[in-house]
Length: 77
Image 1 (cartoon, rainbow, N blue to C red):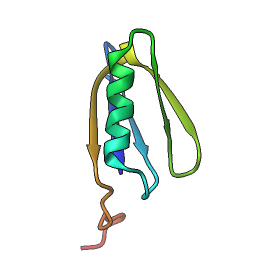
Image 2 (image 1 turned 30 degrees about the horizontal axis):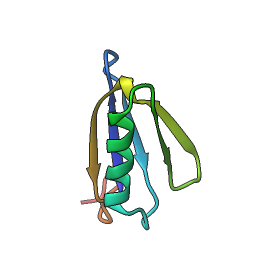
Image 3 (image 1 turned 120 degrees about the vertical axis):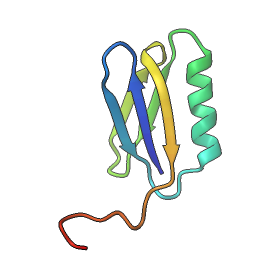
């Protein structure tokens, strides 16, 4: 699953690829919990095991989408 998080007042977007076994409902619940509490932090762990923390008050938007197994790289047709 891929997560895109827009950072408020900066125009920056953080993109994180979560492990294939990530549960969409659990990720959504974690996001909802972080957005619902003042001063909270959203922690996400990517496919390489790197942890990313985003302060909830800086989150402008969040997009969740299933990882594209057919993503193409290069110039092939």
